[in-house]
Image (cartoon, rainbow, N blue to C red):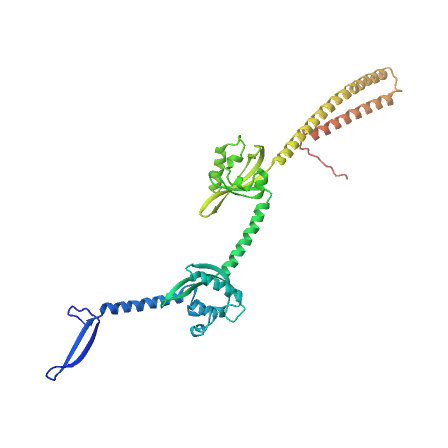
Length: 392
């Protein structure tokens, strides 16, 4: 009906025929305003339509069955997966969707717990209807009342790809952990304040601590007393700003307080939305010992070369002085004899002069070679012009 104010209402009419005392037909009618009831019915119908659309369009499969496994209703996700229509499914039971009786018995045990008021969440192997295709599913079971009768609602999620990805992730993590624990250097992950979050196996052996103890330490706890906290904080801040840091550090084993030399490489890593510091630490104790030994050996060799040069220089002086004296006096003697007209000893004087000069040249050569070896010999390079005349 339409009221005077223009609003529309729903009514229910009823009429009856009666005969009055004069024998005349009398009609009686009643009119009932059923607007609220009609609106409630419309809302209920709309709600049922919405719920049906939600039921058929959720991502997970849904099966409603009784306590014996007889299927009452399934959503479109289940129909699509098994390649069946609603009528075909109405004639099936949960056992028809399983290929293993043991699985059915396990499910029945779960149903019993659900009927007793306990919601259940578990995983099991399901298979496609009339096929050997198996897949992993996660099932959530709860009870619902339909016409005062208890039924089981199964929310089923296909987790096959998720499990494959999870297994691949676990394998990758295990492989990375093996690499992490078997690298030659110690590795720390720590916060900006130096508190340690994680370490590898090499760190435990290098610092002689167990994992539980390591995770209670701060970087300062494993640094020598001579190491500067302010300097460490400077390196950490630079690393967190994106500048990788490499430096030498004095480390300390917390057990016996023994100090050893390390080379540290710092870089920034991010996980869980937070920035942390990855420290790669190399024990360079032996390396520094070898370096020190090389320096000492070099110093000793240089000292030996200097002593050798000094010795040769002294020997050169001791040899050249008497030889020059002999050459000088032999030259004077030769001139005296020449003035007296005696020439019988010319060959002897020539041999003395030649031999003496040869000995001095040899001494100079030995001395120069020694200076070249010790780096004290100065070579002077001069430009010389040569003129070549062609022979005719």
